[in-house]
Length: 315
Ligand SMILES: Cc1cc2nc3c(=O)[nH]c(=O)nc-3n(C[C@H](O)[C@H](O)[C@H](O)COP(=O)(O)O)c2cc1C
Image (cartoon, rainbow, N blue to C red; front, side, top):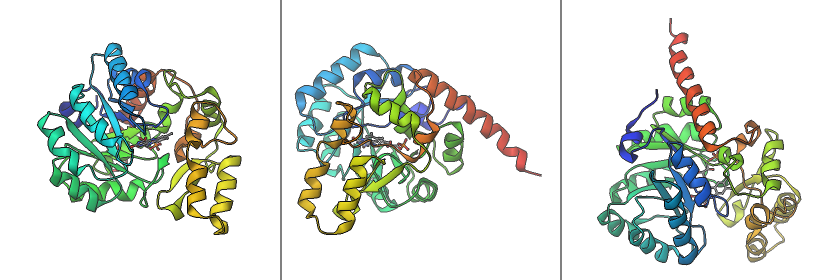
């Protein structure tokens, strides 16, 4: 059985986080992952207090296991949500898109374990200084907003840069990915794309279908010129966006406008032609819709076998 310091710190059976996914990871998915022995995360995205409070309470009704809230620091409601998680007694917070420095003292005083997503060693070192419990080193293979480095290059460098535990994210789609992440020095993993087709995932059926049909080269990164690149599946929306971006003739404000609401269009309304289908490069490895429990158990069974077999190449 695989057991790491992440299991002890977060009081969980399997060292796996379900990454926060805007418009997608709400209480039902988060609770299913937590009930299965990982940590599920409610995405606070750009939502205000009433929605996030409702999701936290719903999740608590569905599980007595640890779960968390993912806070996008660019959200206009970030400060309100930062206060809400304390008020609601949330135990784990992950953060994305920025530095959580100003919120950390209050979170730590409230006993919240804070795990920022980091794209570089410099940011990993900074959040360690602020008191982060662990970091999520996320490589650019991932779905959603991406950094420059790949998981295979970022994880070992972050492991060397900090002394807190490192959770690897980006491109982990099965037990082989988990085993590889552990070989790089991570002691936990975070997955997003793999959970898009969990039975409990409330994303629109059209979105799930696109993931199940994806091929290995079907993702594209757009938004680099805006300073916040995003990985999605190629579709009419992504192709037209990329063309406009590459032409250099479309003002940045217009590109920003085009992107706004696009994930919601696909994830909630099911418009998989004109919406943004955020997904990582492992989308083509996701070939079935399964309960979160089965996804996690299968991944860890396979990881265990791979790790046991790793010594076979020694002579
Ligand atoms: C559809 C989608 C939406 C995402 N939204 C967020 C988000 O709101 N906040 C965040 O920190 N990360 C977000 N992510 C990143 C995930 O939390 C996770 O780190 C990433 O998916 C891991 O890589 P993988 O997709 O290869 O598994 C998103 C990813 C996807 C696929």
